Image 1 (cartoon, rainbow, N blue to C red):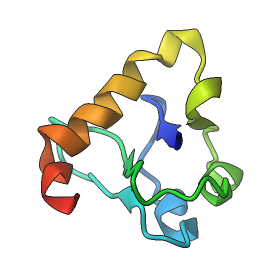
Image 2 (image 1 turned 60 degrees about the vertical axis):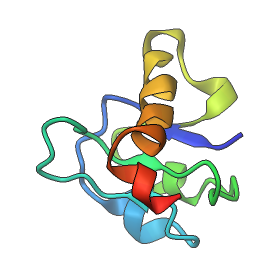
Image 3 (image 1 turned 135 degrees about the vertical axis):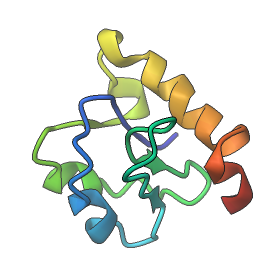
Amino acid sequence: MAYVIVSTCENCGECVDACPTESIYNTKNNAAWPTHYINPDTCIDCGACAAVCPTESIYYEDDVPVEHEADIEKNEAFYVEGPGADLI
């Protein structure tokens, strides 16, 4: 399991700076992939990103609210078929 950034993310970058494993991919100015994405293979579940998120847009995967469950699949797709595929 890992943390997931949901669609309420405003791309402020606080999470990117807080991540000790550099597991968060910054997608600023990318219309196809409009939020940040957390690499589930390198995330250590420390929660540092969630603690600094001003929009409370980061959840542990099991705790993602029902209305944002599609964001779990979007995060996975980012690392399978999106720009993050080259990062794994």
